[in-house]
Amino acid sequence: MNLESELVAALKRARRVTVLTGAGVSAESGVPTFRDAQTGLWADFRPEDLATPSGFLRNPQLVWEWYAWRRERVNTVAPNPAHHALAAMADVFPEFHLITQNVDGLHQRAGSRDVIELHGNITRTKCFDEGTVVAEWKDTGHVPPQCPHCGGHLRPDVVWFEEMLPVDELQRATHAAMHCDVFLSIGTSGLVYPAAGLPLQALGSGATVIEVNPEPTPLTARVHFAISSAAGVALPRLVEQLRA
Ligand code: OAD
Image 1 (cartoon, helix red, strand yellow):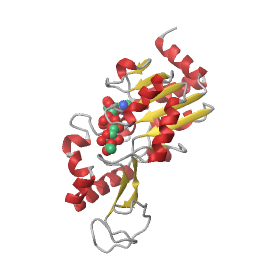
Image 2 (tube, protein in one colour):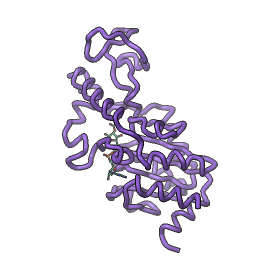
Image 3 (tube, rainbow, N blue to C red):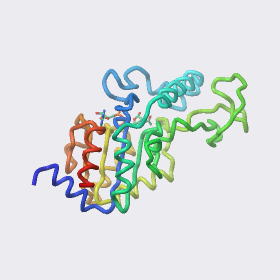
Image 4 (spheres, rainbow, N blue to C red):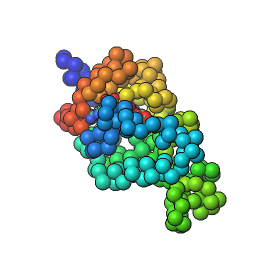
């Protein structure tokens, strides 16, 4: 039995499947990743200036406009075959959990339900001081706009460095990682914790762990199956074989 058929056999036996995705899943939609050399966002921008509370307080207008630019890009792209394959995968298994580090909402636009968003969502906005999500605000000309409740700065509802992950989402993600038969880590460099710890928790709980990434990561040497391919190629093929 070759590696791929062993992998498909392990998936066909599975009842509970958990998936963790990262920026690589949206790369084929035209959304830049963070750490890919030259093309990654962190190649051109300093995360400490743009993705930290202290960076925001130093220059709120710069940060607000940078996220507005990213939001604009996300609005102009569409989910790719990897997103659609994961939406289809949810109907293949009795229990399926999709955890993402992505803030682009492309999984939901591809039809995935109940996505566990570990790092928030760029299409939502919240008050910097109160932490409450704000859907509407008056355009007073301020950049960033002001919270209609307290007058404080508004900010994107994403998790920045130095910040805690949303408690409920992290608890659900940890439970899903520790109670699955197969865990798939797709399109993530595995460098940012606590998300990068989830595949290790799945390994420690006896799950079969599969990685999909064209490049090796710190996780590659520890997984049962490493698919060295683009997600938009590997995942539709995997779903096809699961349905066969
Ligand atoms: P990274 O940019 O660190 O890693 C993207 C990974 O996707 C790399 O390992 C690539 O090799 C891989 N990749 C690229 N194209 C791919 C494709 N077509 N198919 C499959 N994989 C592909 O992005 P993340 O791991 O998501 O957090 O980064 C984690 C977190 O760091 C982000 O959520 C963000 C960032 O800073 C915060 O801002 C808090």
